Image 1 (cartoon, rainbow, N blue to C red):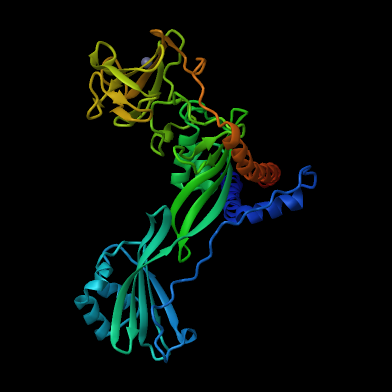
Image 2 (image 1 turned 45 degrees about the vertical axis):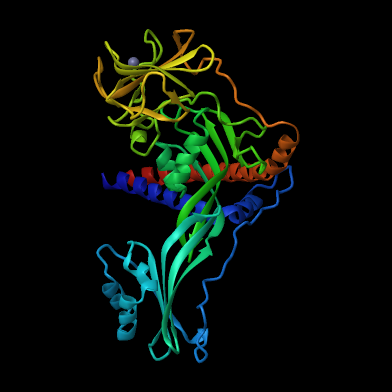
Length: 465
Ligand SMILES: [Zn+2]
């Protein structure tokens, strides 16, 4: 049925493209879009902070007196798998015996021989085609003294011959936003919104005390996220940190804002708008959520059994998936138990214990009496004991009785207080404004999507008849 197939695929492409564009416009674009289509915003628009530092490209160490920058022609090539310095220079059209001798002989130019595929080499030649300088950003993003910097090798022609120098310059920080609605999987939605993988994993981690990303995700769940990225020479070098996040799961909104009190003895963390920490005493899920494990997605596979007539929660996951301690505690027992197979029981503060069964193996260093911290990997998913397939059987026990952790009265996290709380509110207000703008944007987007879909369905019907 070619008629039926065409509108469906056209809709898919259009939808994905629109999301990518929305992700790329950033806060300015979001503000503009909301301003155009949504007239009834009661509160004044929050000031949009543009925090990106704009830094010029590195200038040559010393400009040679008779060459002005405007006369230079700059070429750039990405390093390919299997490239050598010679093959790369030849792609750049550089044939300069003096340069080649210099690169072999000078110890300061050694980093040119560590070629990483995907990274860029730039050369500048003058009117006569003579090479003036060459730059290789071999380390596009690395942290130094809390700042993200790019490290590059610069080779410059001087009247005395070539000189080489390693340079370290700050990478540019950008604030980006992403919004999305989950249709089939979290990663499908974040990919469509252009949100990097590392940011998605952070989102999951930040809300891992609130949301069970294996069991709780629903089609129609929404996210809005403000995050940092770093670029150098216009290339993405690495994802930074999630700055603010809102996740609507099954109709309930969860928020988190990054806040660093910048005070001795206090470290940064994520807090809800009321100043309560997003980090609870217990994680919701004892498994690491990754692109692979999320393949089980919304298809209900993760749960083989729920609490009914069964003492725990079963998470289907590939063999070898890391299992994490859901809270700080001490190993009460580790070993093989009938039916349960390889099993670990952790004792936590108060009357809480947790049990992890069917493991393929235990993590190194886990033994009876050893201390574990929340999130530590204690073992790996398997199918030992009475298990029909690889899965984790997890029990949450209060005074020895297994209960559903979702219904449990789990100890709450600490909250910010006093002066710190006031400073947090001032800091969080900006992000509250950002998230509100993104919400408005998302409402418009959904409306547009629905009307487009309706139009496509109508035209689809017309084509078919
Ligand atoms: Zn079970």
